[in-house]
Length: 59
Image 1 (cartoon, rainbow, N blue to C red):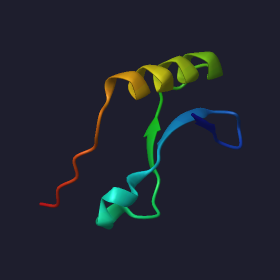
Image 2: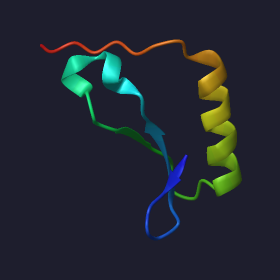
Image 3: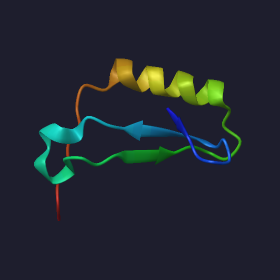
């Protein structure tokens, strides 16, 4: 979980080095306006528990 300059939380998906096309990048999830820091942290923790990987495909 990260914060924009205005303290707006967002979730960073890091550690994508295993996917060459995404090496040294950060994917970000924008949260609904008004999401609190506490809610964002809870969402990030739940994502960590439930997601085992990332699929990336170009069309």
